[in-house]
Amino acid sequence: MPELPEVETVKRGITPITTGKKITSIFVGKKDLRWPIPKSIKKDLRGLTCKEPKRRGKYILIPLSNKQILLSHLGMSGSFRIYSNRPKFQKHDHFALGFESDEWLVFGDPRRFGYIDVFSEEYVTSHRFLKNLGVEPLSNDFNSDYLMARTAGKNCTIKSFLLDQTKIAGIGNIYASEALFDAKISPKRQAKTIKGKRAKRLVTSIKTILLQAIEAGGTSLRNHIQPRGELGYFVQSLKIYGRSGNPCFNCGSVVKEFKQTGRTTFYCSLCQR
Ligand SMILES: [Zn+2]
Image (cartoon, helix red, strand yellow):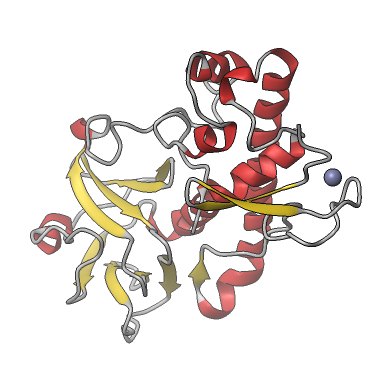
């Protein structure tokens, strides 16, 4: 499932094809996504010009020339593809924009957990998907004071705190596991016990891990974009996620896994306390 770095990579990938481009054609597939694509979308978007895409959590927001916003979420398996002229749409293509330049941006999603919406920009903070989103982890608003204030008095583990999109937006299972390993903090630790230096360390680890992944995504974008036009997924170099049974890169002891609120957590019981 795409997390913040993958979504940021996709956003950067679609920026050159959308920014300043006029929409002349809109394709909507027959099947619904997680939520139906607004029926009026063809009428709403035709003739508008896209402004530079933005990201909020795992959402990509494309501001439009009439003060509306085109929102997309990749869900579990969504991806964008870019074409230099009108493509033959495939089975899992659900939405596409054609531009005056004849370029196309196509949204495909085999599992259809993704979604597309259009709304007026005045609702950007009150829209049902956006209004409860927590802080952007790469912003200055996310710091150890924020972390300590939000975890104080709460009875939850730090792992489930990091996954809570209403506290921090965009982190999922992979990068929560990686950040906790980097910060040498056990995923089982109570969130409220993370204070002082440990809180600073965790904040630094989260930012570092996300930035490294975005950088890796950028590299993959350059290698990836020309042949097939697909954006969005890249091979991450993960240090703990998915490595149960293998030796920890730090200490050599065996990486463990267990289920935590329905998600598999990977950790080293020696390094992470
Ligand atoms: Zn270890």
